[in-house]
Length: 305
Image (cartoon, rainbow, N blue to C red; front, side, top):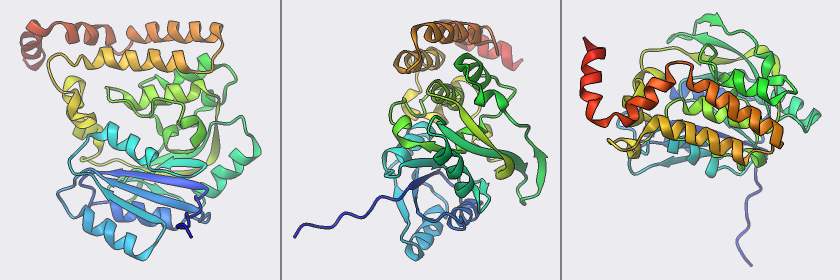
């Protein structure tokens, strides 16, 4: 007889981590405490140099739903986000950051929304920011635009820097995720991927604060830095003079529009929004900086003075 194949869980939870020993235990425990328990937890360790491996392996030894994998080298944030999905088996998928906490009913409540409406791409709860000790420091406002029937409204809202892209951390349909480019290796990768997901349909927001997002000095946003320097965190392979990260960012967005299920009119509107986005957050200057290779040291000195 052949080997039996384990039944796939309904939900896959992917946890990319690098040197997360400060908070990873709390994040794992919040997943294991879910009232909906038909899930797998995939932990992809990006070659951590702290106590992360020991912590994760101790939990994996006690709970067969956990799969711990360690990369031979640090692949960068983007590839590690992609890896946890590529390893998943569930009908639904959720990203669980190693420093955030999910309410025990997170999966159950989001699944109820998805089961009730097959047109919804993702369901996610409201988010509250917490500090290093777990105390709530602010509650983020709702994002009703993500529920709009107009894809242009959804896409433009996803690209706004005034709003944190917390909707990415809800429960998403795996069959739709598989049709996207997943988390790209570029600046603003999370916004580009969120915009692409919203091209496939609306999200639904569960009106309760069940996702606790941790603000702390070692958070990836701060560790990555800005501009070209951020690529060392997102994907070390993208470092180098001729990598042109901002041109790649817009290239990812253009390809996302092209492969989306949007009709011709809505694709045209999406491309127009992409061009509009070039004018926001000084993106046009960043595109110039990518190409101004001989002038980069001079520009860097001007910004540092």
